[in-house]
Image (cartoon, rainbow, N blue to C red):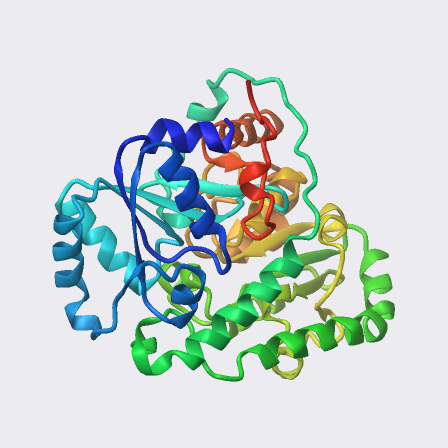
Length: 400
């Protein structure tokens, strides 16, 4: 379903309140589109970054304790019928959702695409682990198979996102005296942009220093398990795993040491958005020595993910959408947190300790994969990105 048609159908003539969106101009441009469909649009800003990209919004500057009361008054004053947001696990959004449900206000959430890299997610009531998508093999197997249409490549999104993120953190710092930055889900340090420069530097560095390591991994066809690391302060990790990335790493290495075959390898793949913030090299090396699997545990930052998934014996993730990518590649997948795609027929159902030796027998059901993907494409996935200026002009049809 085309994105324009979706928002016209759902929000024409309604009172819509925008909360925090993706960094950048997306919500500002979305508001213009909604107004064309006779919606009345209001916006709430929580920091200088929000204000910079949407200066006509209402600013919230008070304490966290007063946020729920603010929402009650704001929604009543604006006769809000719908709230839109990006990510449903942020503190400011969780409290908004509580009040919205109290007043029977519809909740719609944007998120990065489940089917990446050329889709975005737009879903009602919850996304990721909070999604209300059916977790039933039979539900999807009974779906009518749709004729697949190609997803068009949209290039250039990352450079826009990086620039928008720089501006967002810059103005969050500059306007900090006028807001309460403590309620933001991530730190808003004044030199946050330095992490982005370090990420770019490391990307160039790893392209050279990890070339031999990547070649080694690519040659280990069907001899390694791939463990996917997520951003260290990812809200999906915080609320649906409740442990740290370090805990996940140790849990995986310990289980691998105790239960995997002696000739198999374990490869940790770093998250590209965390490249400038974290480096787990020493931590992984120390644990490998502690559990006596040194030489069999590898750690890589920048590799071609589809190739890694295709050649892996299995994939282990907390709840990353890379897990869904693994499933789509036909790679046996174990979820350690909570994920919308974690159900019989798609993922490994038993405890992690058995996965190392049984993964080969639990490849995802190919018909189920096809039907599940098609269901996502016709319900909550749109062929677009948030950051490129042409987003709302991009009118590719996914299904007729």
